Length: 71
Image (tube, rainbow, N blue to C red):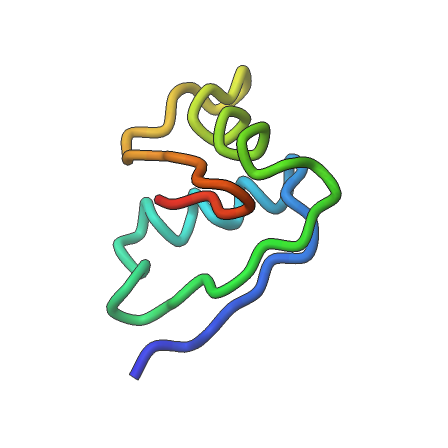
């Protein structure tokens, strides 16, 4: 059973936490990210995750559909 996690804010730290979960292979099996709380529209969050100027490009698939960002 996966631990459900919500990320409050998807700035530098929130994106790093998400990337760490993905990079360690925990997403899906052990950790399920069920929500990201931020004021920025989902399309902008998806873009910021995909094209991070400090960490480089995110290797996974990132899409925005309405108010949802799908990884």
